[in-house]
Image 1: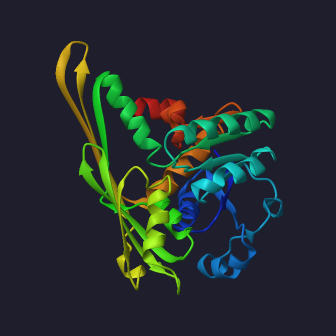
Image 2: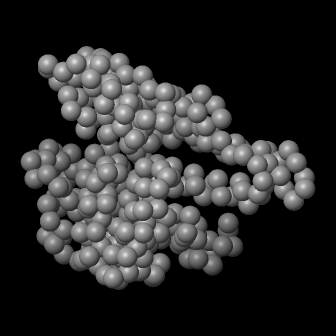
Image 3: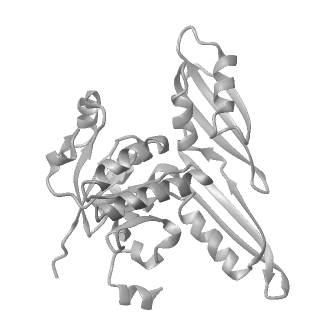
Length: 303
């Protein structure tokens, strides 16, 4: 039976954007309709990296689109997502600012999506995202107790993007170093633009909401590129109580190439979004089976 393919476009073409394009191409139920760049000056550069794919600055140049993958910085999502939702096009993002920011974004986009018969899936990365699902499963098994989420060691894409946006920074890398029990150090390496003072740049980095709650060290280097390794990982542990039985221990670990994992989850969420009613959802609110390609009954039987 011939599958009607989901027409997907990718907004942005950084590390996650590139991997999103690949993940869409590898999905049997999807087709990559094009790449959307917010900065026209980047079109020639992207054309050198990807062949036979439309690269545009306006989604209307791509014809009918079912969903867009927002491979853009988290802080740009609240501004960019409504543009597509108001056109009746579904969106998926990997918004990674934890806490109230996620819930505020969900509330704002839910209203817009419902008014325009579209679906937004937010925070569809691996944390928040699939790690959120794992934490939930741990609490199902042991409702009382404590869960610790330890990231890394590895490159944090969200934190790196933030550092690159700081005035005076030419290039940057932010590494997450786990200290245990959910406590982390941030090791930041920056190449400064001429005339900028490391102490002032470091102060701006440490005061940013992304870093303010963690022990952060900032170092000046001549070549950031030689330090970059996009590998990352997470190790989660829960020690808790099932009914009245104590000392229940649950662990989950993974080591991943950060952009590829994030992109794959976003593409799966694009599929899941087309199965939901209009509105805005986090990954936690969607049945896991909806993220997978294939016949639902067969998936249930196998899994």
